[in-house]
Every structure is written in structure tokens, then in C-alpha cells.
Length: 313
Ligand code: GLN
Image (cartoon, rainbow, N blue to C red; front, top):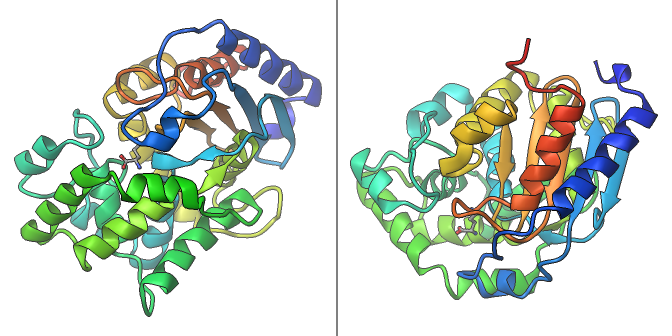
């Protein structure tokens, strides 16, 4: 239970994690999306939000960065609530791909089944399952879900969206491969448009930790007190995060940190401790898998200090 962690302990943990993160100097900003290359590489923030709604933060914890792939978790949550976990597993999958997040090869090898909703192919397929009367209604539902998780109104960055929409040629290919395999459930370019928008919203490390704390608190946002998703789905979402949340480094993260996590090429990273808290880190320089190096260090530091590894005995 999160009450077991005192304010003093958590404040100290997030401060130390931020200092530990700053010691890491490797990595580079993502460059394949022009906007991301332009973000200040020195920014670094960390936050913890507990399952009883307490907030602790250090560094650039209020700087708003592009959510990118972390958005996949919240669109998955939206669709899972609507169609149920078995349908997601059947239509999209529940296994790691072992390949980069935008791999066409992984999709080809699985005959067009994305395997995971947390790689690009699976997230585009998931976005194609969002229901609504038209494109804008479907997009609004995704945005509302991100906002409910964060406990405040999240907005699209027109600048990030423009940067992505005009350079997402590889993702367009993925959308068409899905469509040809029968695993894109709406117009493929519309699904891609919505997916690209969902990656282009701005969040801070505090927002991200609040979003994670909603998963840690069985689908109820602990800051607003509002029920965001069905309790029974959180375990499946966390399982997907454990298997594929950090792409080709997911196994390493499970081995070292032992928590379900999710990263984005905007430099954000989230880890969830079920029933207890969520930890968020943010810093733009990435490792070769596309995960924030300082962000991982911050999360790892908090997990070690507070002994949060789910597999530790
Ligand atoms: N918008 C990015 C893309 O589709 C998200 C990737 C990521 O964060 N790993 O390529």
C-alpha cells in the first residue's frame, strides 16, 4: 500500500533519482521526427505519484514534452474498455515482437498480426478500433482518455503533429500492410492520422506519473478520484507494458527494474508499481532502442531505493 511510503521517503527518492539521472551523459535526441531533434537535450525531470494521490517531483518535472509512444497505453485502455481484453488479444496480440518498434519485418513474419498493441503496427490497429461518428469524434475520445488519465486537459501540439504527419512515411507503409492483411479495422490512413495525433500531445513528467498512478490504482485517478477505466483491464495493460513497453530493451528493463514500463521517443518513460505508485522520468537523449537514458536511470534509482522490483523477495 502506498501509505507505507512516507512523504519524506518519496521526496528524498525522487530528488536522488534526478541527481542519479544527471550523471548519465550518453544518447541523442530522436532525429527522425524533426521537432524532437530540436528539444533541449539537457532537460531532465522526474516525478512520483502515489496510488493515494501524493505528488513528488524534481528537476524539469513540469516541462511539457511529446508523449509519443506512451500514448499507445491510453488508446489501448480506451479500446480494451470498449471491446474487452480477449478481443484485443485476438485482433492485435499479447506478445513481444523482439524487434524495433516500427518493424515491418515483425509484421510480415506474423502474417500481418501486430502481436503487441505497444509497437507501431499494433497501436495503429488499436487506433483503428476506436469507435465514433467520424474522425474528429474518434480523435476526441482518445484525447479525452489521455486527459482523464492525467487529471487535466491534455492538448495536441500542432507543431509536433505537423512534424510527424509530414514525415511518417514508414508508418504509412505499416498501415497499408495491416490493411492488406485484414488487421486494420478502419480506413488505414485515417487510423494512421489518429495514431499520429495521439503521439503529438504534450505532457509533463507529473502528468505522466499521474497517468501511471491511475493504472497503479486499479483504473481510478488518485488525484481526481474519478474512475477512468475498468479495474479488470489494468492487469492486462500492465502485462503488455512488461513485455513490450521498452521495445527491444523490455527484457533488460524487466531483468533490472522488474516493473511494467512504457517509453516514448520524446524522452518520457513511465513505470508502474501496482497498488503503490508510478514513477515518471523525462530527458530527450535516447538509447538505440528508443528509450530515454536518463529517464531509465531515474526510474531505476527510485525502484532500487524503495525496493519496488516486483520479482524481488
Ligand atoms: N510517433 C512515433 C512513431 O510512430 C512514436 C514512436 C515511439 O515513441 N517509439 O514513430
